[in-house]
Length: 230
Image (cartoon, rainbow, N blue to C red; front, side, top):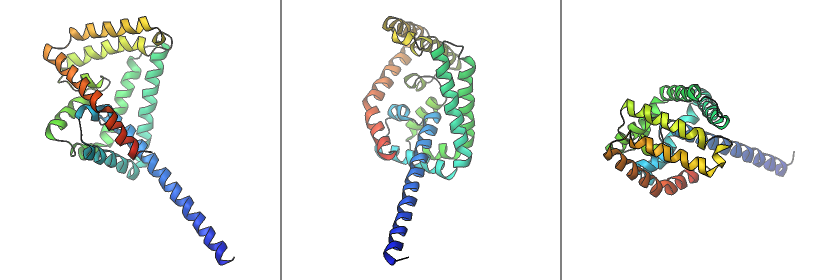
C-alpha cells in the first residue's frame, strides 16, 4: 500500500471515529434532556426557576455526562419512562381511562429518581437556595403543570389539581375533541373554575407570577439547550 493510500485510509478511519463520537455524545445529551425533563430540570422547570446561562449549562452538562457514563443502567429506564409517557398520551387521544397509565409514568419517574440520585444532587448544587426549594416543589408534584407544581401544595390540593387536569386533558388531548375550539375553550374554563376552588388567593397570585416567569425565560432556556444538544 502506498504511503498516500495509507494516509487516506487513516484519515477515513479518524473521520468515522470522530463522527461516531459526536453521535454518541449527541445521544447522551438527548438522554440527558429526557432525564432532566422527568426529574424536574426540564426546559419549563428551568424557566420557572429563572436560572442563569452558566447554571443551565452546568446542569445540562452534568446530565449529559451522567447518561454517557451510566448508559447501560440509565438508558433502559429513560426508554421505559418515555414509553409510559407516550402510552398515557395515547390513552388521552383515544379517550381511554388514564389512571393506570398516569401511575405508570409516576412509577417510571420514581425508578429514575432512585437510579439518578447522584446527578440530581449534582444538578441541585448549581441552583441557589431559593431555586433549590422551588425545584424541590416542582419535582414533588409530577404530572402537575409547572406553574402549579412550583406552588407549595398540600397532598389534597395536588390530588384535586391532577383530577381537574385529567378532566381537562381528556378533551384537550383527545384525538377528535382537541380540534373543536369550543370544547377546548370550555375545558380550559372548567379547569380554571376548578382551580379557583382548590387554590388559596395567594397561590392564585403566585401561579400567575410563575406563568409570567416561564413565558419570560422559556426562549432563552430553550436556546441554551438547543445550542448544547444539536
